[in-house]
Length: 259
Ligand code: NAP
Image 1 (cartoon, rainbow, N blue to C red):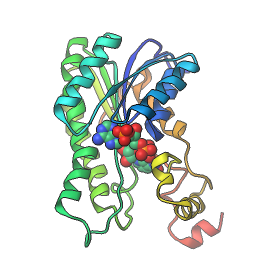
Image 2 (image 1 turned 120 degrees about the horizontal axis):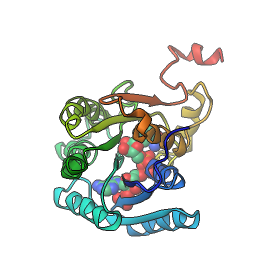
Image 3 (image 1 turned 30 degrees about the vertical axis):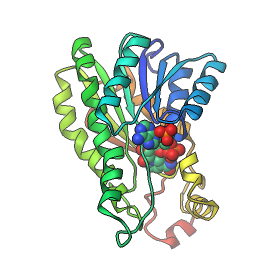
């Protein structure tokens, strides 16, 4: 049993859908106050309504995580609504699939900016809050794609997700003086709105290649984020955990067939 996070203020970027919504619901179910940061109003309001209907506390703030002014406003709105920021879950990300031969330099820059630059912006905007409090928690959503595996069409995405892991090594050292930890969850294939867009064939092939024989649930990632945000994880920083049902383990198709 982890020490309660009830009453803590949590920002979840990309909390309106998919993994972020799962993280938001897991934290809200533990009594945390959740700020959902995303661009789209309808899905964000729906996420807030679902959390409130389950007895939780949530609000949303229109945010583009790739934009510094917008990210600063997100943090200010959270302080205004909940009195501070105890936990930042920098989760928002995109995964448009395009092979390098078709990828433009602007395509590359856009993915880097939403997936990687955003990690820096969100953490930077929270530093004054963590410094004043003398404590804080940051959990990034990275991926197995990039740091561990590759997939045609995701060279920019994989680079951005590996970049997040590089970022947390030095960020952990710089945040230590504020009593703040930063860690990353590396999901495998998790059943989300974004993943559904890749089509049924993709989902079926992926589920078959996972030793636990199912796609991950968003709560699987929420629970890992919850652990990193807990008091009990206070001596872990600059680290990452793979949550993938064993997806990265098989050495060959024969290996998965043996199960
Ligand atoms: P999703 O279902 O497409 O949801 C993405 C969320 O991010 C939405 O709430 C979206 O809301 C928000 N978002 C996108 N661009 C944004 C921006 N510029 N500013 C603010 N919010 C933005 O995606 P997901 O599958 O849950 O993925 C979430 C994270 O998990 C990503 O970082 C992804 O790389 C990572 N991940 C996912 C999987 C998987 O299998 N699903 C696996 C590994 C890693 P708006 O569009 O309304 O802004």
